[in-house]
Length: 406
Ligand code: C6P
Figure 1 (cartoon, rainbow, N blue to C red):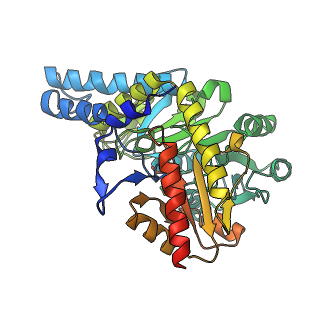
Figure 2 (figure 1 turned 180 degrees about the horizontal axis):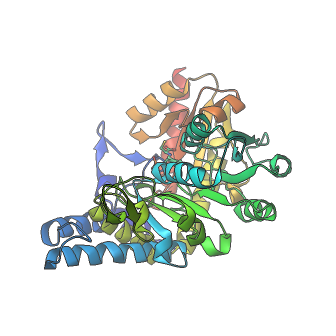
């Protein structure tokens, strides 16, 4: 069991007020709040060990490099990659997917080749493939979802052709909360000799990731959604594939030897890490991973599942409530999208904010999914390990109060 009150004390922002009301922060799918230890680790490095990494022979540079590479090892353990060569630091999930679209696309995709994505993808897993389509003439195939917000696996199977080169799928929908059956999807793709990229942006804070057990070929995540700093993310890639892919960006760090005529590239993972990395953020990310790992995913999942099931039940009792996504809490991460009667999502979100409740409104960077659902947007409440049933109650009471105004 998590000791939530103690945990909340680790997150100073949770005790602030907005509009003279206690903050109820339910926008964790957009970004999670940070425990003090993450910010402290970064401050400590800035004040005591700040120097550029991989470049200097001096003491501080060695120390900063050690911290940076230890962080890589922490990430490796967190996702169970075989080697740190498979752990590339990026700015976040968006950059990780762009890296694959660009570099994998250049190495393995030509005109007429196909990538399969799904109807529930975030724009970050749609637009990079459209850019590749413009550049290289690839085709994008879209796996539909069922009416209750799950992937239509039969339809997915029928999308494979001899031209399919990659499946790129989210682990968890940032709108519907749907937890996708990744192992099944990956097994289907591999049966066609097609690699799979997993967008784990919404998954990483809620369940353990094991890239070897999943057998995925690429996996992208963002530090800021796992209680870590902004501006840092990870791309896991299978070494054999990464070896065959060209660099994404050119510059310092990613090179072996440079002449005006020719440049050789650094070994993995540095081949994909041009320029000074955000080594302070990697320290923060490692500390966040330690924090989550110390609490343990068993306890985190038990708490968040309870919260999700409770929230689904309580919300469903509100008159004219429409919840999108699976009703089954077992395949539902703590992300709940809803609409109430004819109230516009923006109005509802704005009035909830005035009552101290932070939720997200709009299309959630998933416009094609909104089209599929036949709506413009939703209100989205998303929970983290520090949220409580009392906060769910506060949300429901506030929704009821707003509904009476309309
Ligand atoms: N979703 C949300 O409020 P970045 O911005 O690179 O850290 O993550 C992009 C991203 C990719 N995939 C999924 C499934 C996501 O949910 C996100 C980020 C946030 O839903 C911000 S739009």
